[in-house]
Length: 353
Image (cartoon, rainbow, N blue to C red; front, side, top):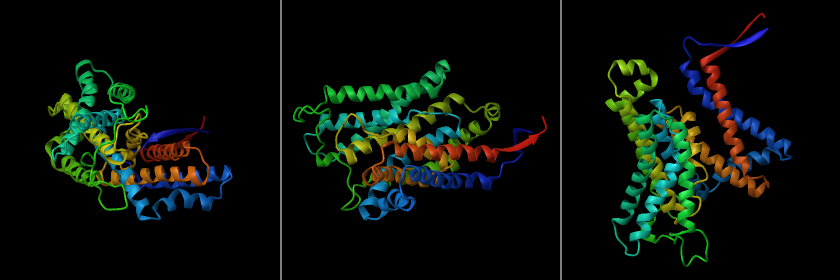
């Protein structure tokens, strides 16, 4: 008997939306089995990983705090993915956004001013867009792969950040630690309520989720980009500009990633450090596909991914597990999602040799 994959004539829409739920369930089951093999009681492991992080108001605030950059990056990436523009470098655009916004804070932060914080946010957005413009230019001018270019730019952005905090932007009163000075109160994003670290960037992210839905569902530009993703030949026949779609997709995703970067720097971090993100830009790729490239689904996927970050940190403390446990659960989620999508679009058939 020889097994082979046969493409389905009409994949089930219901199963397409059920695939992320099945992938999440399989991730939980497999993750718990792995923890049992590591000698951990499954009940305690589940409680520590998925229940305890949400058992307090502070924990819920931390969930929303980590959801914010994932949601911002995921929304921008999804717009590009819909039009077959594959920006894999949101992590670098996030880093550059944090650098540009912090540069404004360090240059003008000595005097309290009401315009400073909006200027920091705008600088972060512009920084992310400029970094994303590099793969856009190379793709439209020289037909290079935006996947490789955007990915390689991540490491350049991180090296630039390291140079700044070890060199010209290092705090002279910081005991030689590689970090900038702490931001003043007027350079930090306001908190939503007392006792948590969630700030107004979460509300901005929710607003952008609504605007993202309006853009993709109600505007001509969004329709043009969706057609380019679903039927490139039809888009070319209709005269839709591929160059315009590429530029628009990369600039939008760069803008949201840059906003996520300055939201981290001017939010929970409060200064520039050698690392401003634990990998939000890469995790947002998983978030976008778990959410089926839909703003509401991306919001739910961001909450799930944020819980994995919190659960991983809690497991390190209470279960003495390594930090790689977070990446393990994220990898399982992606693996099962890809497997589920494969079975949604293809069926396994058998034939005699």
